[in-house]
Length: 258
Ligand SMILES: Nc1ncnc2c1ncn2[C@@H]1O[C@H](COP(=O)(O)OP(=O)(O)OP(=O)(O)O)[C@@H](O)[C@H]1O
Image (tube, rainbow, N blue to C red; front, side, top):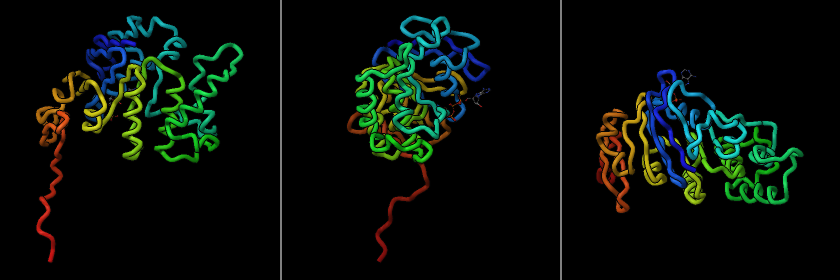
C-alpha cells in the first residue's frame, strides 16, 4: 500500500508535513522528543484529523474512507495501546481479527491457525494463557505486535516498538518487519537501529520535515548537531551504514592496573 502525507498541519504541532512510503517500504520516522512523530502517526492511522493537508492510502483520503475500512488495512502498535490487562494473551492477539470478522463474529480455522503461528513468530506462544497484567513490558509489546500482525495489514504503523525490548527481541522485531512485505512506518529513537532497519529515514524537528533520504544521507554529524544538539562522530561501517560514536566522556582505557 502506498502512503502519502500531503502538507499536514495540526495544532502547531505539525507544520506542513509531507512524506511518502512506497508499497513494501520500511520508513523510519526519527526526531527529538516532542518533534511530532506520534502526532503524525495518529494522523496516518486516522486517530486525529489534521487541520490542514491530507493523508492518502493508495490515493484515497483516510477521512473520506469509512473507519472500518481503514481499520482493515492499517494496523497500529501505539505507545498508548490499551492493554486489556485482565484478558489472556491469546484473546488480545485474536482481537486483531475484529476488523475482518463477519456478522457472526466467529473465527475460521484458518484464522485460529494464523493466530497460533503469529504468536510463535512474536515469541509469545508460551504466554498464550497468561493474563496480560502479569507480563513484563517487553512481553506486552510483543503481544501488541502479534495483535497487529494477525490483522494482516497493508500498512503497519509502529510507535517506538522497541522501547521495552531487550537486544535479541529488538533485532528479531526489526528483522520480522522487513520480511512482511507490507508498508511500514516506524518511529525509533536508536538512530543506529533505525539506519539498519529502514529503507529510508524521515526526520521531524519542531513539527517539520528537516531531512528525508537514505540512512547515509540523513544520519550525519550535522544532523546530530543541529537537530539533536549532540556533537558526535559519525563514520560509515563496512556495510556503508552510519555508525555513531557518542561523546559520553570516557577516556580510552589506560594500561591495566598492576
Ligand atoms: N492533544 C494534544 N494537544 C496539544 N498538544 C499536544 C497534543 N498531543 C501532543 N501534543 C504536543 O505535541 C508535541 C509533539 O508530541 P508528540 O507526542 O507527537 O512528539 P514525539 O516526537 O512523538 O515525542 P517523543 O519522542 O517524546 O515520543 C509535544 O510538545 C506534545 O506535548
